[in-house]
Structures are given as C-alpha cells and as structure tokens.
Image (cartoon, rainbow, N blue to C red; front, side):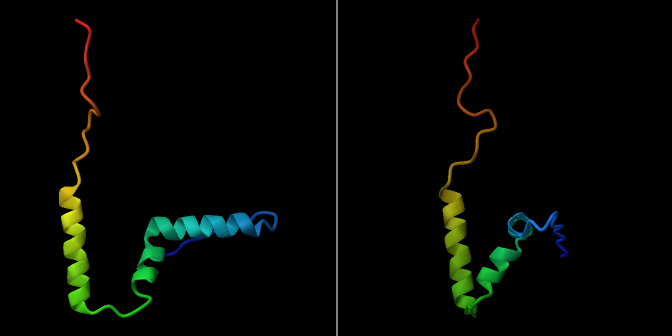
Length: 72
C-alpha cells in the first residue's frame, strides 16, 4: 500500500497528521501494533474467540433507530 502525503509551504505538522490518518485508515498502524511482539498461535486463537464473544453479546444496530411514532 502506498500512502502519499504532500506538504505545502513547509507545514510538516499537518503532513504528519495526514500521514497518521492515512496509516490508520489503511489499517497499517494496527497491524504494526499487533506484530510488534511474537504472539503464540494459541494466544491468537483465544483473542479471536474473545472478540467473537464480544461481538455476539453486542446488540445489533437498528437501521431505523428507536421506534418512530407517526401522527394519525
């Protein structure tokens, strides 16, 4: 994945901010954090199971939000 950041008028702070945002959107920063240290396969499986349990326990999002009452 290529991420290009152009810096205008020497504004490096904005360039760094744009770079971080691009890395976060592409998922590279989270991948770097995951791979920083070796993780045993059993630990990876346990983490995935825990994540699945957390996802199942979460209420699903309602497309319409709360119940809508119409005037009749």
